Structure formats: C-alpha cells, structure tokens
Amino acid sequence: MSACRIVHDADLAGRTTFGVAVRAPLLVEVADADALPGLFDDALRGMPVLVLGGGSNLLFAGPPEGAVLALAGRRQSIVEARGDRVRVRAEAGADWDAFVRWTLAGGLAGLENLALIPGTVGAAPIQNIGAYGTEVREAIVLVDAFEPATGAFHRFTNDACGFAYRDSRFKREAGRYVVTAVEFELSRGAAPRVGYAGVREELDAMGAGEAPTAVQVADAVTAIRRRKLPDPARIGNAGSFFKNPVVPAGVARALRDQHPGMPAWPMDDDATKLSAAWLIDQCGWKGHRDGDAGVAATHALVLVNHGAASGAQLLDLARRIAESVHARFGVALEPEPRIIGAHW
Image (cartoon, rainbow, N blue to C red; front, side):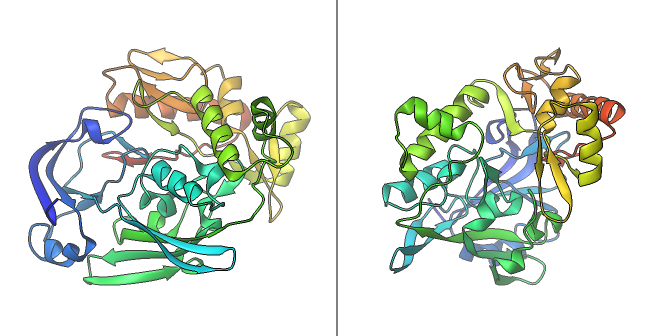
C-alpha cells in the first residue's frame, strides 16, 4: 500500500460496526504515520478531521463535518524482553483481537481478558477499553501520537495518558491527537485473572482445570462474548452502548435497599459501580424494537441496527432508554460510543 490513499465522497457504512448509512466529503487512508505532517500541511489543511479506527465505538447520527482519517499501519513487534517481562509495540491500524492473539501465540499474558473486543490498537487507549475485570491501561507503557495543530509527534507515558473508567486524555481532548502506536508490557509467567463473574464457570465448562493458561482464558472470554453479544457482521451494533454508571456509595446502598437484587461493585473513593444492563433490563428494554432500531434480545446494553436504521433513530432510542432509567432509579446513563453529528 502506498503512503496514503484519498477518496472523495466516501461511503463509510462498511467502516462502522453499526452499519448506518453515512458519507464523508473526504477519506484519507495512511499506511505510514510519518506521512501525517505532510498531509495536514496539504490535503487536510484547515479541515476538521475525524480519526476512524475499526468504527466499533462510533455512532454517526449525522455526517462528519470534514475529512475522515484512517490509519492503516499494522506492524507488531517485540521491543524489549527482560526476564519474564516483555514489551511489545503495535501500530494504530492493527486489529485489536488479532493483536491479542498474536501476543498469546508468543506466550505473553496480560491482554487475554480483552479478547474479541472489536476495533483497532489505536482506539484501545482512547477508550481505555475494558472487560471481565481488566482495563487496557494496566498493560500500556507508552502511547505515541501526532498533534496536527503543532505538527509534532509526542510520546505519552501511562501516567500522562490520564486514564479513567472508559476514558483518557485522548478522549477528553478529542481531535487534538492522532494515536499512531501503542507499547504494552506483558508477562511470560503471570497467572491469568479469572475472578470476574462467569469466567471461572466458563473455564470449568471447558475443562481448563484449576490453573488455566492465558490462551484458555481468552478462549473462555471469546465464548462468553459470542454467546452474549450479537456479531456485528450479522447485525449492526457497537457492543455495549452505555457505560456502567458510577455513583456515591451511599446512593448505591439506598438503591440496593429498594432493589435487593441490584448488582453493584464497590470502587475506590467511596464510589460504587452499578450494572447499566440490569437497570435497562428492569425498565423493560431488552429485545425492544422501533422499526430497524432496537435493543439486543440477549443483552440490554447493546443497541442494534436491524438493517436500515439511521444513526439519528438509534440515538433517539438511546436517549429514551436513558430517560426511563433516570426516571425510575435516579441514575444517569452515559454512552460509550462517540456520537458524531449530534450531542448526547
């Protein structure tokens, strides 16, 4: 592939997992991050730019204002090995699940609980992706990024990334940086994390024994995700649409007094995380459908496009779900995907 490819009036429907109809005035694919300064000085000068990875964490409720930039570099390598600690690097365009499997094939543990999450490596630190008791920030050492406004490349340490629950400085400062590569520190001998609900049971059903390998944990997580979450290749979706809300511990205690079956997980700073799926399910939304916009029958957190739903229709459904949860429980829900063309 050449350093870059430019497409005018580009169809983006196949580049997002929701599959909604949307077009961009300009799509620029970049194979080598070194080409970014020249592009922003030339073809992208003065234009609003949306960086698009795997399209698994976006909802286009309207068209993008300017250009869409897609990083296509996918190189992966071992940077350094010291004892059982190994540092690996992947370019932003690498498929996330394929990268996780590459690390596992090399005998490296640390990312197995994040198997089968759709998207690219470059998107992982932006969202601080997490699943089954693990967040990607725990393994990230460095994030390389380009700043279009200054034309400078930056290297951010873990602390400088400002990670929080499903959040980072790259998300909070959307549009300021283009993540170009990520480095992770993994282990050759660490025991996998299997304490999250459902993982141990899945491993037992697989006959994995008391000391499962990282590969077996990844296989268990993959099986659970495939069973619970609809496949974007079959029906449009962006996985979990809402974040699990975090509320003061006192609020959580009061809610659990009223609703004894409510799942809740204590966190630091006298806060408690609630299950958005449970809240939505209690409001009767699981399996709901308005035309082609709906909620998955298997998981209340997942909004789905049954075929021809627009992004605006999906956003309207999401807002009504959040309003009903707030009316019943007094808890505010926030979307996980970035919404383009509208405000939450």
